[in-house]
Image (cartoon, rainbow, N blue to C red; front, side, top):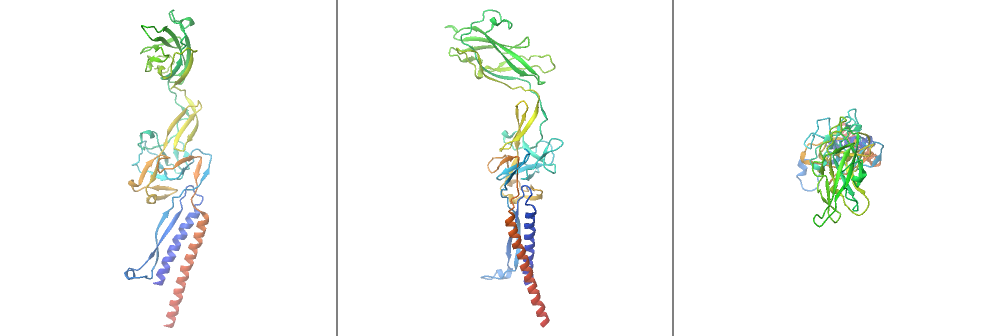
Length: 416
């Protein structure tokens, strides 16, 4: 019996030494989580049925638990190095078709060392893709392997112009037939830079002519807005008249003014414009001014930078200053992280769907993401060395006990 008791102690000490040694070996491993051996005592079934204290028959290893405590951060220079502040795991997959969702066989990790491979995918060191939700606003938590956009951003033709202006209330009524080359036939004019489907700049000029003053019979001030590109007028589908009340505010149109498709004659698609004057347009007794001007077209431009904010939003900035939201890092948390299966290299697999909760950084229970940083191991080297000494003493003590029992047995045998 004594041999067996001490042997269980030797086995436990060996396992403790293995776990402590593994912790120490991974003190420099990114996002490594230390493990702990849980021990329990053994009591014989017969003796356990007796009242009062009974002698035990040794110890056993109940299990090895990982301690998912937060590691500290170290700064790096790569925007694709990501650290999780608080709970949560990155979601990874092999290169798979788009539309990998929460029900897919994903892998999870906290190790945020990601790289751009030859095909533009953001992957870990073994080529597993980081999953990103391209449309996080719909709340479906559907992840796609993240791929960098092309170095040159595709152009987009202008279609909507938000235009807020003040037309001078003291402008004279135009009595002559409109002629864009004769400034006496219109009150004011301004130009707007647009873009065609090829990304080429297109300059449009808008001429404003005053048609009438408000009267008791017609209490409105009426203007006409004519749009020209080059020497040709862009024809309106709806009215091109601007109607102001006697309070100086725009009464009509209340919606965007639509224009017929305009053929530029340069190989680009016809330009289809809508101008929204209702945003901030007025007629007050002051000089003509532009109070708001925004159009939705842009040229082909070069990718400048990629940034990832603490909420996991991936934002591309182009050399024109235009920013594009590429999606949001998909993450997961677990009601019981101890149920995860370790695969090595900081990877885990979940075997229980009811343990998984998918979301995004800063969601409830999921930590924020810090770019240009990596989480270090949560191993405390001092504690591990002290634990290693205790495990070594435990091994030596059990070995000494076996030696003592062996010596007693030998002496008893010699006397017999």
